[in-house]
Length: 232
Image (cartoon, rainbow, N blue to C red; front, side, top):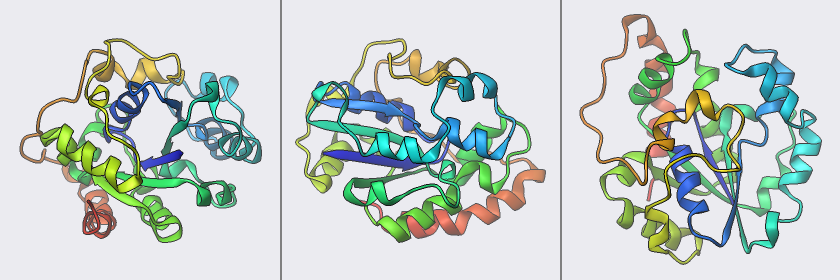
C-alpha cells in the first residue's frame, strides 16, 4: 500500500511520519517534492540551497520515483507530502493510484507556529488552498491533528481502519532523535519531534494570531472548514 499524506507545514506531519516508520512494515519518505518546489519558485527558505543540492529537482523524475518500487522491499510506503509543493504543472497522476490522506490543523495554530520560524507567511506558504484542491481531485481520508494529540490510539486505529491497514501499537512510540529518512531541513524544523518519543498531549486554547496575520487567518479558515467537515 502507498499512503500519501498531504498536509501543510507545522501540522504534526513529521510525528506522523515517525509513527508510520515505527511500524516496521512501512518505508517512509520525507517531502520528495521539496527540492523541485524550491528550484521552480526560487523562494527563500531556511537551508534552501542545501535542499536543492540534495534532492531531485525535476518534478517528473520525482513523480516517477513516488510511483516506483517501494524502498527496502517493504509492503507499505508512507510518503509525507506538503500540499503547497505541488505547483501547477507538476505531475499528479502518480497519486491517483495511492491511498490519499489529508492531515489538517487549525489555521491559527499553523500560522502562529510557522511565523515563529519564518517571517511574513502567505496563503501559498501554509498550503490550505492547495490541500483543498488536492482533496477535490484525489479524494481520500481526512484526519485532524487535534484528534490525534487528544487520543492517539483511538484516532490512529480509526485512520488505519479507514485506509485498510492493520493498526499496531508500535505507531504510538519511537526512539528519540532523527530518522535516516529525514530531509536536510530537519535541523531547522524538527527539534521538537527529535526530542519526543511519542505524540504530545492535547493542545490548549487557540493561540493569538498577530494583527498583521489576521487577513491570512481569515483567508485560510474556509479551506480548513471544508476539510474539517469531512474528518473521520
